[in-house]
Image 1 (tube, helix red, strand yellow):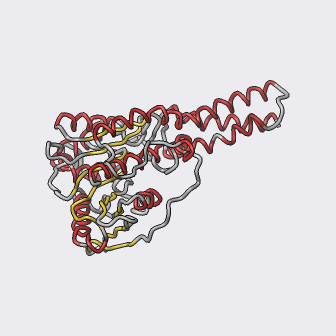
Image 2: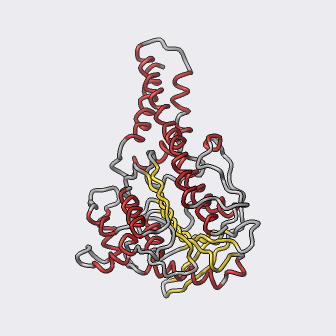
Image 3: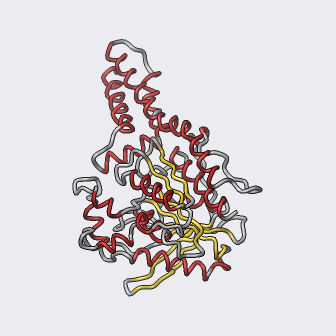
Length: 378
């Protein structure tokens, strides 16, 4: 028994320690998402090790010490999220206040919800083909807003390094938004390397045009669109929104996105988790020296001006896949150009921090997205 307790305590402590360090590969990154965003559940195992069985040896005592360390680390993300809540609320209140008469979630995190199993109510999701190519159609999944006519609509661009990913990702978050009166259209786009930039931006614009044509039948306002993307999808959304030449797009939401493709290439490494140089060159047709204009057109950082629509940027300080400096630098650029925006920098979070709707990152994301949309399109 002492040996078994020690093994499980040690494994728990090792997994929990991922919240403190950068990780070198995809498997450990996935474990880190679990440790940071599902930590309250991970903590159950070391808690059992602490309170089940008696301590009969020095090894037992050491195992209990390791288990306590694991519990503290697993719960630290929620603790840090609670500490950051006041700062996040003040930032959103200053720039995107809750509109009068509209009920919005009051704060970025609820401790009881961290332990919740509740799922959002189902809505009927409508797949729609919005553009046809010789290689096949592009499809979107439409989540209609509940109990709200002429609703604002988020056009959601999936992540996946531009060469993979699915519009089916984060289904529960889309359902949550639909139940809060915000329609969501989760779209396909052409993938690299078969399709190079700006094909992906063109596909977003095609989806917007289709949704605008069908707005009355879908119960959405034809002039209240928002672009939103995660990771690579965030880059696409930012680059489409930054020029400010789409009058029906009121704002853009980007989660852990590379806003500056020049900066991304400059700091990329073939040995990093994603092999970033390969992803960038297969999307953009070469290095920045070989395809400067393409890198410029894909970089919201370069495209930003006073015409840029309001932005909501969210990034984790412990992101291994996309450096948080991408969003921090872009926020400074938006500040210089006078663009209305908020940047939330989550101290505990890694890439894909919103994977769990009930976790600290998921709660922050849904709260901020709803506040942003309702503030600009009450």
